[in-house]
Length: 88
Ligand SMILES: [Zn+2]
Image 1 (spheres, protein in one colour):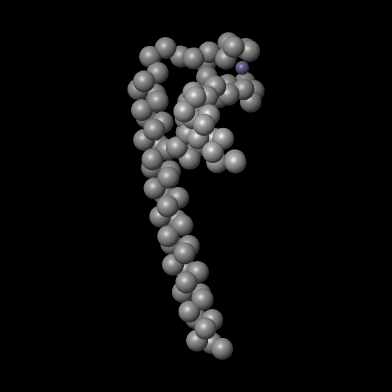
Image 2 (cartoon, helix red, strand yellow):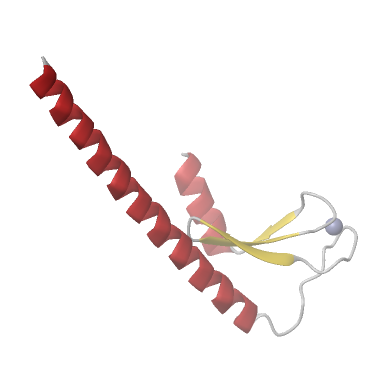
């Protein structure tokens, strides 16, 4: 059934293209949020553990600060809720 196969392949290609567009959009949005975070960050946040300055990161629209020395994270409430909503 070559006709059906062709159609499925085309459908897969379209879905992949759509996914790639969404991924690109998400990356652009994350990058934009990251720029905003950097602009907003007047004084560096320091890790309460080792006192190194935390680095801003954005993942799927949720903003967080990560310690460069270990896996410690600082989350603002809004971002914490976004993360929780994603794992729920
Ligand atoms: Zn630390």
